[in-house]
Amino acid sequence: MAKGTLKGKAAENFVYAAQKYISGIRNSVTRDIKNFVEKTLITELKKVRFSNSFFANYDKTLEVLENQINEKEITLETYRRLSAEIARIKV
Image 1: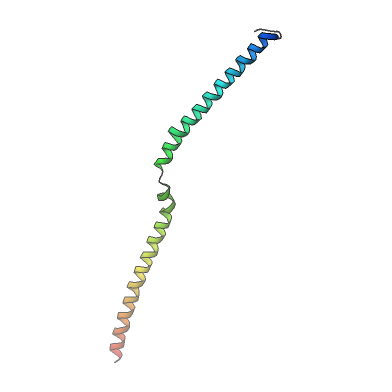
Image 2 (image 1 turned 180 degrees about the horizontal axis):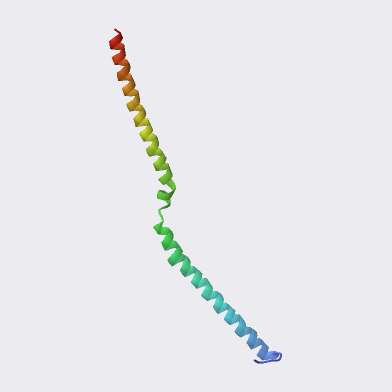
């Protein structure tokens, strides 16, 4: 391990080398993050069907409501038939 104080040109060279090294690390990290976002994150997000996930609950709710409406109409029709039969019996 070297000890001492750098002065003059040696100090300038050291600072330049350190800045170049940091710049290289910064570029490498930026590239890695960009690759991760483009190749991994975006690829995985494209696989997700947000509309399906978002509207799945609404589709299920609409299906239940449609069934309830259909059953109500069947129940009302049955009631009307029975009511008509009772009316005929009373006459």
